[in-house]
Image 1 (tube, rainbow, N blue to C red):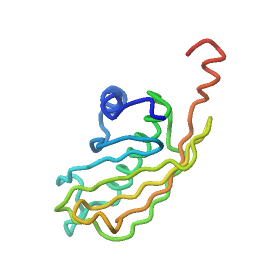
Image 2: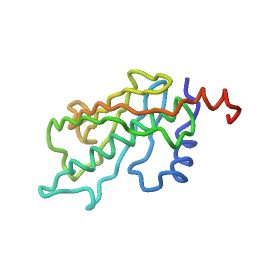
Image 3: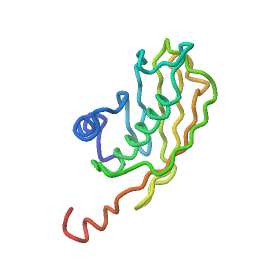
Image 4: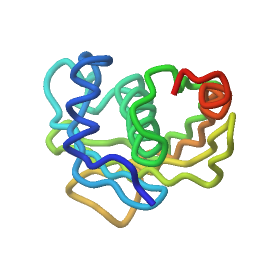
Length: 146
């Protein structure tokens, strides 16, 4: 069950992570979809979407999927991110990230993100697996700080 809407997450991120990339298209049970409009700052020669852009975008999409499940938590942080570049993404089209949580535990979230070019929603350009360290939300409840 989601505890935050896409709009609520966007407002939260505006406060705690304003430099993030992309816009949230949707959130749902253990998932999120985001879109990034590609500009010159995202390109490498070719023009192709740069690897750092796609890795950062995947990281944000994973964070959004987690926030939808646990609520506004600024200190959920990336602990591991593994990126497989499958093919080039043309700089002429937006990119779309589909994040899916595989495990959401008390202290750890594990998931995957597939990024597609908006011109081809069949073949992903990037596949990412990532884990996030989560603050122990139950300890806040126990200590009366919730």
